[in-house]
Length: 392
Length: 173
Image 1 (cartoon, one colour):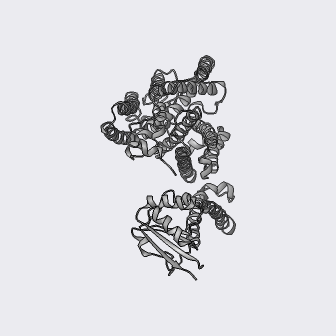
Image 2: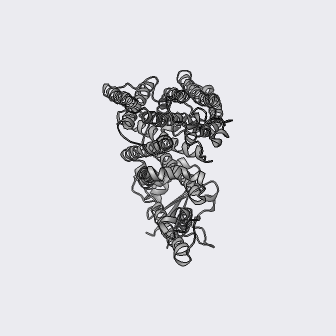
Image 3: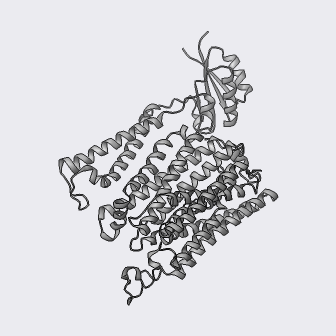
């Protein structure tokens, strides 16, 4: 069983305290800037934990054995999901109450032809982008994903005590249903929460772009938590073979992300249609440095560092790439959300970084707490023995 | 004493793998092992060096990338300047996004094809090549270990002891 040390607790408390100070400071100083910062940081960790649910389901559906030794790590990461989801719903409701102006289409009168703020393009999207439907959808994603995670974890715990194959078989059925639901809802989540910030603009592959970003951060977080626990002396069966496979996933998803990023960019750049190209003009003109940093470090570093077999088997390399990739994808989330809200008045200062620290602390606190609740090895999993002998 | 080649034939790959470990632990060098399918862990048991094909693939990819950059530059900018995407900049770095798919595809093409050719070349797999396997049953359900030595008696007993179902000894000139 895993126990949280005093130091680990202290770190998460300090980070949360910094976050709290940043939230108080941010909202009293400049609330217009603090809201999107809250959204960026909350979404970043929400995506990580949502992907961990997908990861667990994926292992069941593909009947894979390699990930069993650190399955409980992924389960621990999913425990953050509900907290992140509730904060997300709070941000959405706050948007409707006009506490924040993240979603431009929530503004009063924007869909009313007799109002001075009338916007015919946004009014044309009213059938999809109206608050009741938007809120119901958001609640459905969060509830659906959370419920799947809860059931999968419950079945896994049941397997620990009872053994046998029944919980494993039920997990496969549940995972298959969940993956179909997740396939649709993760794309819709991306359109709703992120793409509709730039209400006039749309991109057909945006859902997969967001999903691939979630994937990179999710795999990275699972690998980093597993390595940290391994270094502390837990996870006795995790060795370089398992980390090697996780490294392959980080590598592959970084390439997938680049592919999505570039496909979206190149088609818009090439066709040069005004309503599409404004999205990139806003990022190119006002966020130029960040735009380049994001696209380069999320591609070049994983590509060059994780290409060779030896580096994927080296815990230190994975940790280094992990930190770089997490920073890079945080910038990516920042670039997806901030330009539509803050236009050219963006900052990365104490409000943004402090809130990141706060959410990181909250994330670590919840994940650490969840990890203590069950043994770190699923001894009754049908593939437990196979996973111990995993060798590549 | 003349040099002999000993063929130990096995029915099961696990038995073969253990036998390989046993033989190698006695400092006897194994010339070759023939199997109908790849056996996990055999390369390691035989003490083979890791393949350098991956390094070759990386180099081929770099060559492909460079070729594609030169190709797009020559065709689209130098030889016959093209108006790309309605943006007649006629500068390579400004039109670069349009060339990325070409560069990517050429990198993959060079890397994949040259890697296959290298593999076939290194394994001496040319059209009309005769098999080097001493026993055609190794393409079906048997596993064969080939050892060259003067002392066929000890090796035969050792192979027999570690699970070989059949031993064939052949003299080589």
